[in-house]
Amino acid sequence: MSIFRQLHTKSLNTQSTRKVLASRFLAAAQNSTADEPFPDEPTSAYYDEQVNKAGRNGDLETVGYLLNKRYRDGCFNTVNTFKFLTDTESSLALIDPLIQTLSRLDKGYTRKQAFDLLIARLCKLERTDEALRVIDTMAKEGYGVNAVCFHPVLNTLTRKNKKEEAWRVLDLMRHAGASPNVRAYNYLLTAYCFEGNLTEAAEVVKKIEAEGLIADGRTFDALILGASKAGKLAGAMVLLRRMMDRGFHVQYSSLANVINGMLRLGYFDQAVRFVMAFRGRDRKLDQESLGMLASKLIILNKKDEAMLVLEEMSKMRLIMGTKLFEFYKSNAKNEI
Image (cartoon, rainbow, N blue to C red):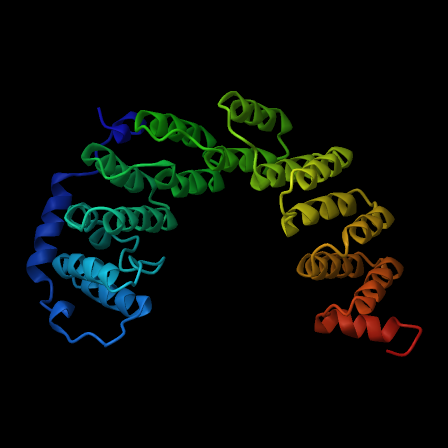
């Protein structure tokens, strides 16, 4: 049984779809870009334009030709390569013949990357069923299915709060011989933490540890989000310290989650002290965290606290946005 059928029992490859395809291909314009002269130094953007032009015309033979040639010319596929696929019946009818086209590409990286980007495009359209069907073909034909193939599917499902389906996709990964990695679990962990559901988040962490996987920066970022959402600020700061002790780069989102948690609880002075304690490690991080805190304090009408932050930004010669600068200039006691 295919990995796709384990998740969904309804087949998407219907007779009506084949009829739509047949009529589309018979009417497709014979506008083959393969016969057009190529520039001396083609770019990835040029190839994307030509692939999408051929794809919109239903000329998948030319699409395949271009995908092979671009790799030989050193122009890799991009997120724009399959933009000709849209969420319409006529466009989605191209999926099966497109899978066949990709199956005939040069073996190795050319074919694998094309399949990976097709999966990503389908997930961008929130067509996770079709994306899983692509993965199913890859698994059957031995086209190098790995955890990366499933990441866009997990990302889309968890963003749509379809966590039960996401758990089943983890099972499909194992069946396909692509053991879930820490990034796969991080998608589910983030979904639970976004809700402030620390109980379920803890279960995900247990599974990560049970499988011998090592938490990464995204794991800590998600847990900090969950602790902050749940009002467990002491726990969030402990996690932040552990994140730093393990040598992970502190992300802006991690600081922002703690800051937002403090502001929600009315801990304005503590938020200022917290951000001040972290300044000086990363100039870009200072710019983002101090600027964000100042903006939120102004919105909350905490002008004195906002001025402390803006004065620190001035001392550090950090750039202020127009509104922040105008507020600082109108409230500063000393000349700038």
